[in-house]
Image 1: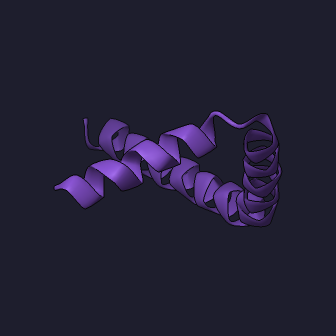
Image 2: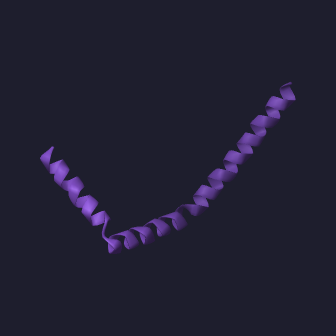
Length: 61
């Protein structure tokens, strides 16, 4: 428990460092750019499935 508290406290202090925040933002931006194509494909697929389900429900009525 003590070690966990020390680690969490240390991480909180590091997270308050502006240089670390800047680097974390850059890394997050790169991760988003890398994931964007997959996210767009998944979003498109979800939209298609939603439209098909809505059409099926309306056709059954």
